[in-house]
Image (tube, rainbow, N blue to C red):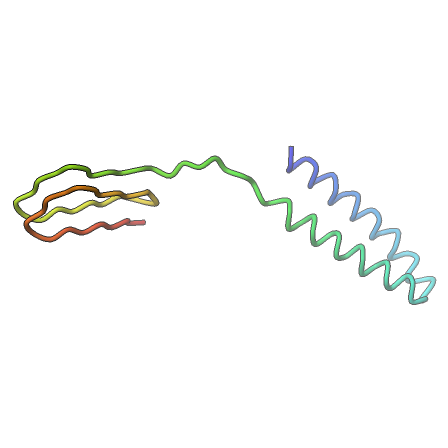
Length: 100
């Protein structure tokens, strides 16, 4: 729906700019220049708003709880994720990483 409203808004702004351009070529008064700047700002705001698409949160979660490890422990994910490690007994090293 947001893309439809943005596309319609862009067409309306383009039509108004077209009409305003005709006026600007005939009337070089300061009010026409001010109105063209306002139209330009509105057009820029519509184009900025158009590509913004809200995505549902798809962040994965990785937990490591209550583990007993005699060596090293590595927690690794591909891409963004929430990583948690609680109440672990680790004799060696512990590392967390996110790739991608």
